[in-house]
Length: 453
Image (cartoon, rainbow, N blue to C red; front, side, top):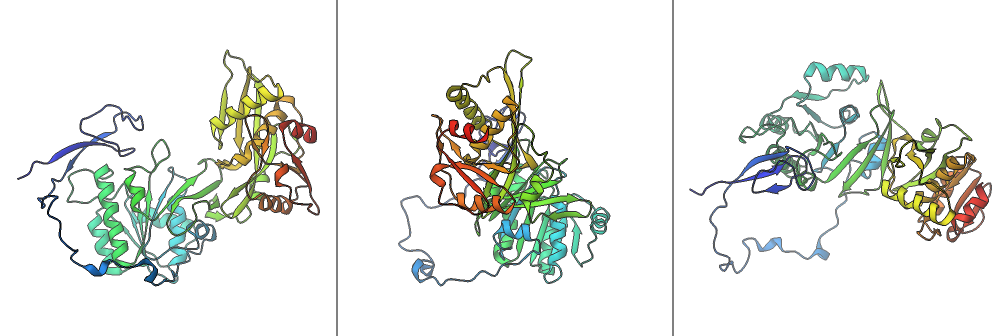
């Protein structure tokens, strides 16, 4: 009998090593290495003895001769969710949704199950809450449909119930509480999460039922378990936003059947997750108008343009080293912009604490936000107000030039729709005049100062 091999796997990131380590060298987490037994490889012919042809030669086909099939998606009834998924749920697909505790994962998918159950058979399996707890939330949300529910943590029982009911949608809440009794490790371990997810994927592909897997996240914001978990599924969704904030951002970081740039915006209320169909209005409604350190910017998320408020606070430091903090924007990018402002404009920011924030809990990585960040920092530093009717977008180079951005026309149309009167943008993106709005093209940061302050 072959001897079993033992490896140590990080439960946070899936890093494997042959010996135990106190700290994972890949993600830096302490005491996260778990011992995992690997089944010995079965005996196989030597590499030199390869069959002359495969067992089933019909599996070899020409791609140009494969007939195109029309995918009929299942519309969830929640417009923002369908937008992120690419138009709805694809039959036989596996969706993995992650987010911090209390951000609204279970609430959203319980609402989705309620809407789908009117025309489709849905099975909701919860390993975290009892029937009474889920029923209490069900009534609080005002839901009334007939949803098949079971409180179970054993995967065999869940799949047996699914084979009996044959649902079109199977929801697992959550993957960290489900376990396979044939494995010796406890629920939530790397081995259990990986094997349970693999069995759920096989179930979806063989039966054609769609599976929604809800997962916890680690301290770094990644879905708990090995990274292979994200590679197994078809779609990976992440909830963004602070639990204290009302807004929730649903973003697809992987989607085999649609775009990964789309976002869905929700408002967390007592009645559940409510769709925000006009995110620009929702993001700008709560801002104070005509205050120093505030600037309007138009972000592009997939096919949607969203107006956001970029806030900056600059104040003289009380300590030896100036402090820099960011929320919703890359810290290194802000440091680069500060360096350009110090070198090219002569702003003395070395003794100033600088805080930059994106309003509404959004996380933006678009370089077109550079100019808005620079303007908000200058506005706060000089205590000069930028008009709330003015929007700014453009990329800043290291020499102080303002570079062109992509899809400027869509940003301009969204800004015009929201009542913006003046837009500062790269000169290369000027394509003509727009009625009802003033477009000002700039080539350097100096031009921006001239037109705004």
